[in-house]
Amino acid sequence: MSMPFKKIVDLAVPMTNMNTPVYPGYPQPLRTTFSTIRDNGYASYVWSFVEHVSTHVDAPFHMVARGTTVDKMPLSRYIGHGVVLDFSKKPKRFQIGKKDVEKAIKAAGHAGEVGKGWIVLFHLNYTSKNTTPDWMEHPDITKEAAEYLIGLGIEAVGVDAPGPDHPPFDAHKTLLPKNVVIFENLANLDKLLGKDFLFVGTPIALAGGTAGITRPVALVM
Image (cartoon, rainbow, N blue to C red; front, side, top):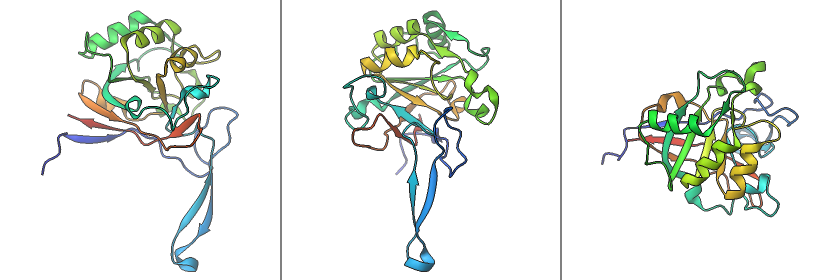
C-alpha cells in the first residue's frame, strides 16, 4: 500500500557523546557503557544530558512559573501543517518583525491559511554554523512578530538555530506563556522551501520536563 506522502525529511541534529554543539554554559551530553553484547549478551548505554540539547522543543515551563511541562502539552502542539519561512539571507542578529513574517508567509504561498493546526518554521541557516563562532549570531524573532504569530493561532514555532532570540528572550517570553512551543536546532529546512508537508515533532515525555529532545520529521505531500 502506498503512503499518503511523497518522502520523509529528517529535521534533527544527532546528539553525540561529548561532541554536540551546546548553548554556551550548558554541559556536553555524556554517554557511558552499561552493558555489551560480548559481556552481557545485549548492548546498552547510559546517557547524561541537559534537556535543552541537540534538536529539542521548549515547553512553557522552561520560562513560565507553573507553566505546562513537556509531557503535559497536548500532542497537537507538536504536530501540524508546516510552512518554512526563508530568512536565510538576512544579516547577523537581524530583527524579524511582523511585516517580515507576513511577507514571508505570502512568499511561501500560504497567505490567509496559516493559523490553528499550523507550525511555522524559520529557515535561518544557522544550524549549519554550529561549529563556528557565528552560531550565536542568528536573527531574532521579535516580540511584535511573536505576538502576530500568536494572533494567527499557530501551534508552534521552529528555527534552525540555537534559539529564536537572544537575551532578554522576548520570543520565548511571548510565545511560551501562550502555549506556543518552540523547536530549536532543526536541520534541513532548506529542503522544505516551497513544499507542502506535515510536521511531526513529538518529544520524549520527560515527566515535569522543561523541554524534550525530539527527532522531528516532515512528511512531504
